[in-house]
Image (tube, rainbow, N blue to C red):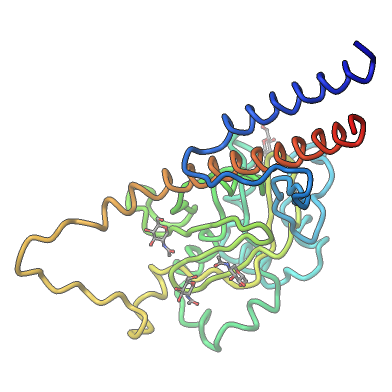
Amino acid sequence: MTMRQAFCSFTLILAFLLHCTKILAQPAAAPAQPAGPTAAPAAPSPPTPIVLPFPADGPAQSGPTDVTKILEKAGHFTLFIRLLKSTSVIDQIEHQLNETNSGLTIFAPPDDAFSALSSGTLNSLSDGQKELLMQFHVLSSYIPLARFKTVSNPLRTNAGDNSKYAYQLNVTAHPSSLNISTGIINATASGIVYSDGQLAIYQVDKVLLPWSLFGAKPPASAPAPAPAPTKPVKQSAGTAEDDSPGDNDKKSASGAVSLRGKQNVVLVGAVVAAAAIFCS
Ligand SMILES: *[C@@H]1O[C@H](CO)[C@@H](O)[C@H](O)[C@H]1NC(C)=O
Ligand SMILES: *[C@@H]1O[C@H](CO)[C@@H](O)[C@H](O)[C@H]1NC(C)=O
Ligand SMILES: *[C@@H]1O[C@H](CO)[C@@H](O)[C@H](O)[C@H]1NC(C)=O
Ligand SMILES: *[C@@H]1O[C@H](CO)[C@@H](O)[C@H](O)[C@H]1NC(C)=O
């Protein structure tokens, strides 16, 4: 047996093994993909992380984290800072950071997001409502960017009575954006202002208006009460809600599996091609 024959046998066995791994890794329902040497090597796409423009900030300073200072340094959160201070929510935030280990996540709208509000939006609110509005921009745990892929919506905010769960928002992670929905507005996180393992501050492009404060205003978008059905119909609302986190899990799991399948197709292709060159 020559070296070349040995090599050829080895590559063929390797190709066979890789092929088997590929079959095992693929979901049963997935259509078989051609693995011949002529198949164009599909660009192996690694799981894309969510990319936001600004890099995460450096390590935490020693001592209590000064949220005001961080926002001031960023330069364009003047109105947000002013409201955090006038409502005393800044004290609640710093107290929470100081006294708890779960950390905080803040969605910070820049000044132009406040100027984009229709006039009178803020003035129509009482002091208590302004406080709720500010608390609505705070989640009482540290959520790094990558973890938004797996959070289950809706997320509870610092606003309102926790037991009523009235001030909630949904955050959905997409390959290139983090979208936030309150039922009144859809916003996008446009950058990471700060992230240190305990506190995360994301810049959002809109002031997050909670349904509980603004929901009654535009009658057109208020959900129409469903007319009482004459016959009992299958209850879909509850199950839809229960199913959604599971569906997301399934989606991401099968995504990972099919990605592995693709990489193996490329590998099998490469090994077969190498064997073809050496063994002919
Ligand atoms: C944080 O806690 C320390 C002691 O644990 C205390 O001295 C300090 O005043 C607190 N700061 C705030 C902002 O609550
Ligand atoms: C997320 O937000 C961006 C910007 O508003 C929008 O273009 C995109 O369609 C949104 N994605 C989804 C899935 O809603
Ligand atoms: C938030 O997500 C939940 C569960 O997926 C859904 O029932 C609810 O309608 C969503 N709310 C908003 C404002 O998007
Ligand atoms: C927010 O986005 C959802 C779906 O992406 C859409 O149905 C809804 O109308 C949007 N709401 C607003 C206020 O733009």
